[in-house]
Length: 200
Picture 1 (cartoon, rainbow, N blue to C red):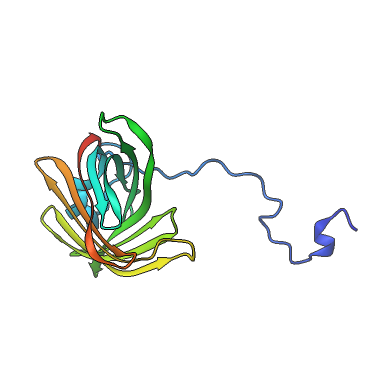
Picture 2 (picture 1 turned 60 degrees about the horizontal axis):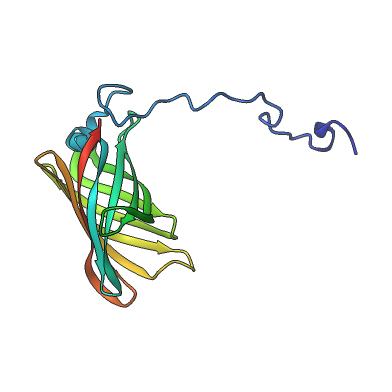
């Protein structure tokens, strides 16, 4: 065996022995006062950019109702989409944390006509429970209404088949309601919360 890898692989890729790189060089921000300039296509979504924290209520026909707290971070990196990150935790009757709950990461993209944003939106939402949801939506003022166009699941994920989400900025707070269909149940209320801006 040769000590020189290129002797065995003459088509050695140029990155194989390249020096290490520094950390990711491009900034993203949830604060419009710092970082890259917001892409003009996102002007209609500007009120959503920030870090939000609050509490909500969850339930479904197949489970008991529960209280939760949640933190949502909506940021951008200057390109025409928003990064959506959410983590939640279950609360007991005294509002004490009980255990971690749902996590999500996703992207919201305005549908463009030429270089201009329309009121139509596309969103991809993924969770560590093996579910990916593709939403199609529409923005009306500071309200966004999404409905699933497709749901993809791993073989071990719960059988979720459809969803709908309504977001709105009401008196400076982020409110949302989420419906879900699955486990043999039709589209039913699942989550709702009121989140207050804590950064951005």
